[in-house]
Image (cartoon, rainbow, N blue to C red; front, side):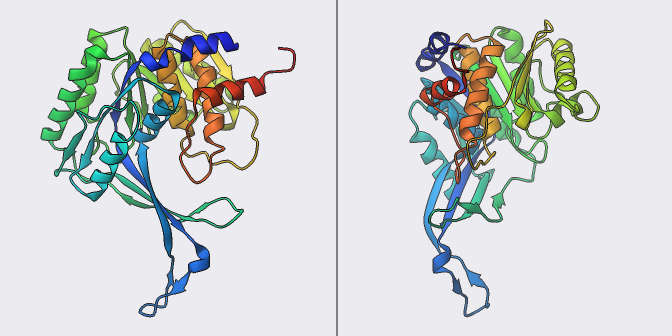
Length: 345
């Protein structure tokens, strides 16, 4: 992709309206100074002194953070938080982001706020080191009342958006945002607006999802085709093409160090090799950077294969950001693609 085409695509971002339906969580980072470690007089255990607390949106919120970094004009989070302290922090973090419209984000006493609490050892001249994470999740079915609010929210925005990204992050089906009823509502929107770009991602499985574009990793691709993960790139390309033909929608697959691929229902498959590693990396959030860049680029009129190239560069940028869940701006993506271009190209 040359610079002119990149600008044609990304210059559209400020005029886009993208909704993000999924499981938002609070990422809370506890920065620990090991030099201030003490021993508890009561228990004899080590005491870790937290010297700084950071909070930002996580899970589906990481996709949202990437959309913000890209300069998307209007971003609509569709999800829920609890009526608790973590919910207050999450909603405050969402409202502080430019372009984010929280008018239909649900805050309810019927749910606790999905939270990842991440203790980090922070030492001078060393990368932050994450300790055991402390999670807060919902383990019971999402109440019908909350489902009704989510369905009403997505229906309200369905006719006014350029793209819809949906992201399931929970461990137990039916306990988060993308319940069976909510997915049925998404399927009805897809039927009414066949031209609307809808991109789905799930940490558990995309099986049973409505006919929308799918983004997954190698393991999830094998699961959807009732087989083992494709062993190599050629096998993954063949499997993705099969799934795209069967579903009639584009399929995107992340292959870790083997890069990314896209398959269209017409049989066209494109692969992009992972860009070179340039130092220490943290892969957390790389897939979310891919999801955000695919959604924005497709909404701006990029082909699936152009969107793949932008997403591949964004993932390369995100993994080199340590101690946080990384994002990538348009300028960073442009620079990364330029750096990766062979001399004289």
